[in-house]
Image (cartoon, rainbow, N blue to C red):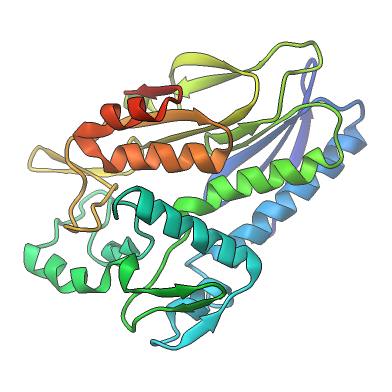
Length: 296
């Protein structure tokens, strides 16, 4: 598929748009000329597409494919991949094993499309031995994944791309910007007129069509985790796509959505995802972190 982007002038800023990581992406800029806006948006889009290509589990020509098809052999990774694996390792430890990049094998059983069938406990039990970051040998820059296991960096990739694109553009800007990839975003500072950027919070019960509030963000990352777009209902029971790596079943009692503001998009994403994984304890977990958050 050919990549493309657009740039549109608003009253007092520019909006660049493109698609990456199965998400609509926007770059909001306060620069003086269309050529400057186009140059910056093109740079951000290329970086997002690069990250997507490198870490997508749907490709057979990248580092993730090499790791997942090494059949128990050790793979040496580059520094960027190593940094993400270090972060995944930290997330696993901080969440007491709730956040686990090896749990992606469960997608072989769970589909969240209309008409999907709930897997049996027997089917789940067969996969559980292939889940567990503690079974992986990770000694930077070498990773050894037991045969039959795989990793998926999808839970980190979009937030990482947001922060990377912001860092890249800020090297060439003396004004603030917003990088927004499918609702996961980073705001670099106050606008030229000294006021914060305004961000709407999606209503998970009418997602994409209605907001339930508006935030004024001076600086930082914001993410929303939830099941508004990915869930199934079977026999009156709602099953979220947020899966428990220990049981193989969807997390019970989790909020419909969790929005968190933190220093970076990756930090916000970590906290909002953790909160979903804590289920009915989501509020208690977030209150202990001392960050602004909204549960719906």
